[in-house]
Amino acid sequence: MKIGIVGGTGREGRGLAVRWAKAGHDVFIGSRQTDKGVAKAAEFANEFGVSLQGADNAAACNHAELIVVTVPYSAHRATFESIKDAVGEKIVVDITVPLQPPKVRSVNLPEGQAAALEARGYLPEGARLVAALHHISSEHLSDPNHAFDCDVLVCGDDKDARAEVISVISDLGLRGVDAGVLKNAIALESLTPVLLHINRRYKSVGSGVRITGIPETE
Ligand SMILES: NC(=O)c1ccc[n+]([C@@H]2O[C@H](COP(=O)([O-])OP(=O)(O)OC[C@H]3O[C@@H](n4cnc5c(N)ncnc54)[C@H](OP(=O)(O)O)[C@@H]3O)[C@@H](O)[C@H]2O)c1
Image 1 (cartoon, helix red, strand yellow):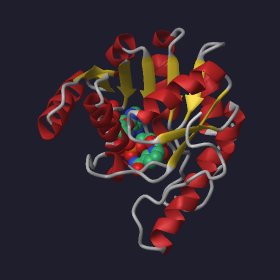
Image 2 (cartoon, rainbow, N blue to C red):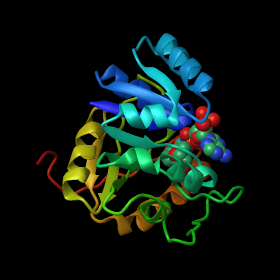
Image 3 (cartoon, helix red, strand yellow):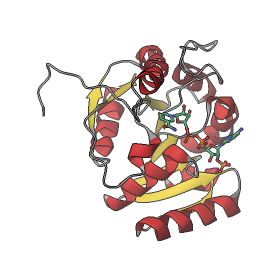
């Protein structure tokens, strides 16, 4: 699949891009600056021995069948507004956690209750928005030898879009679990500060969540 990663030059973008490229997807990373997108794509390709492209965020969206937005909450609104005309009927995955530094271990409910609910308001009516990957650390994503033992909770109002995202998440080496409607992003985004607290308390890196009591495969 053609996957465009907006803000793909950053920590989460790097791990997602490399893992998806390794799995055979056609990955295009985007940046606010074309030169940075090109340079980071070349850097990741060289470092991990994968093939991927990069340029600006608009180019990443235009190239993609599936768009993933990986920017800090402080850049969330501006980024969504900058890409809204390029989205069309493509699925957009928002991984944003509305952290409020320096209090990143304490839940911060934004004005719209969840970044993903705010994102829905920035995109055209009917956009296929999914929220996921809030609990997956960039350190683990970027380590090709790391085997995950946690799940990815996936929410959104379009059931088929959730299923498509769960499918591409499996190519990261992760199990996606259908977590219902987009409003449930309030719970998913709120869990990340809890995990960040747990990491500090237990001196762990990238603690995660595992859903039990469901079939291993459907
Ligand atoms: N890091 C993690 O372990 C982790 C885990 C789960 C979820 N998340 C969530 O994933 C998202 C991305 O996290 P990250 O750690 O990858 O972020 P990051 O590395 O700090 O930033 C990602 C990219 O966003 C762009 N960006 C940064 N500041 C910006 C600004 N003020 N305006 C517009 N664009 C800006 C930059 O791209 P350009 O300069 O190239 O435009 C940057 O490379 C966040 O919402 C975070 O909550 C992170």
